[in-house]
Structure formats: C-alpha cells, structure tokens
Image 1 (cartoon, rainbow, N blue to C red):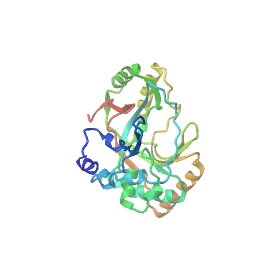
Image 2 (image 1 turned 60 degrees about the vertical axis):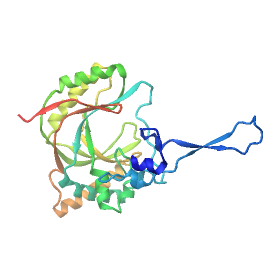
Image 3 (image 1 turned 180 degrees about the vertical axis):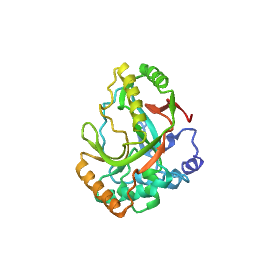
Image 4 (image 1 turned 30 degrees about the horizontal axis):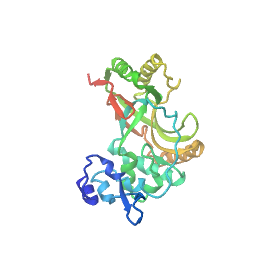
Length: 294
C-alpha cells in the first residue's frame, strides 16, 4: 500500500478507496465573479500492475483489467435490499500431485470449446493458455466446493437461527476421503450457464448425501427450497454462457477415451480428505462442523 501511496502522493485515507477516488480540476478562466467555477472530475490513472500483483499471488489483475469484454452472468435470484445469499458447502482443495494432469485436460478442452472461464474469478481460459504455470495456478490453485444445498436468499433475522441449527446438526463429523471419479457437465436451472465438473460417485458419496439431508431439513424449517431430489455431489472447474452441454460432453468423452487407450485413465481423478463444512452468508463465512479422526 505504501508503494501505491507513493504513486499518487499523500492521502489521508487508510482504506483502498484511493484506487477509485478522483481528482478535481478547477477552471479559473471565468471573468464574471458571479459565475461558479467549473469543475470536472477525472479518474486517477491506474497504478502499475506490478504494485497490484504481489509475489506468489495468482497474478490475475492483468487479465481482469484487459480490454476484452467480460461475460455477462445473470443472477439466480434478484437482489433485494436486506437479503443475503446463503450457500452451504464442503470446501475442496485439489492436491498438488493431480494438478498437472488436470490442467492439461482443461487446457485441451478450452482449445476446442470456446468461451470457457475459470470458476468464480471469471477469467477466460483461452487467455491463460500461453503460460502453463499460470494456467495451472489460476484454474486449480484455489479452493473449490461441493454444494450441500441451493444458494438462496435469506433475511437478516434468519441468519443466527440457520447457523445455530446447522452447527447443532452437523457438529460431530468423522474425517473421510472423497473420491472425484468422473468428468461431467452440468447446467443451471435456467440453462444460462454450463459447468465442466468432476463428480463424486463412490468414496464419500454416502457421507455427503447424509449432510445434504441435514441441510435440507434446516432449509425446510426456514421455508427455504430444498436441494435436488437426486443430488450429484461435484466440484465445478470451469463454466460457459448458455447450454453448451452437448458439445462439452462430446469433447470430454473424446479426451477421456484417449486417456483410456493410452492406459493413463485412473479409477479416480483425485481424492481429497474431508476437512469440514462451511456456510457462506453474504460475504461472511461460518465454520459449521468439527471433525474427528477417531
């Protein structure tokens, strides 16, 4: 932040608002003393990218600030003042040993299917393909999630009750292994987005299903819509606008078939150890359950 201040001069603000503040230019060429000075607000020039990209970061600022248009995503529900988005999930981190192979397949698919973006950060995969290390870091170097319930709006007075009930019902969980076994393509309810995902078919499926049932119960008691009747636990790695499920499935099937012929297709794509359940409400994350190795 000191480097940013040095770029713009002294400032009394101790927040990050200097990046969006403006400087006022006053026109003093008026000859009539009754005429008010004309003011024009101009945005400050952007700081050097090197200042916004600290060492060991994902280095995504250059992509986010590029001139190419960003995709337009529709909200799954309209924004209403006083509402907070609720999402209950299991956080998942891809193990380092699996990242290289996953990145290679993602890169291959993105070269055939245009319009794929990294989940959450919305960076086009095509813009990352020239740098293998950055591609792997940006697409796989962060936390993913297995949804245990729908993302729904709740009112502020419901927050404490929902969090307390989730903690009560999910307080004791044993650690277990989650096997991500199969590439799959999902689309959202209104068919506005397609997701390239990895599904849980065997290891961990029973335990996750039980947690979904508990979350459903909590939702039901708060008059919230329950999860799908036949849930398919998964993590999503990439997304695209619209329903491109057919073309995406075709490419995935072709690529996995090649791996099968080469003898490099494994029983599972990767495994991850369950580390707890979380609940995100608005921008705040609540730790829900504690686990035991006993």
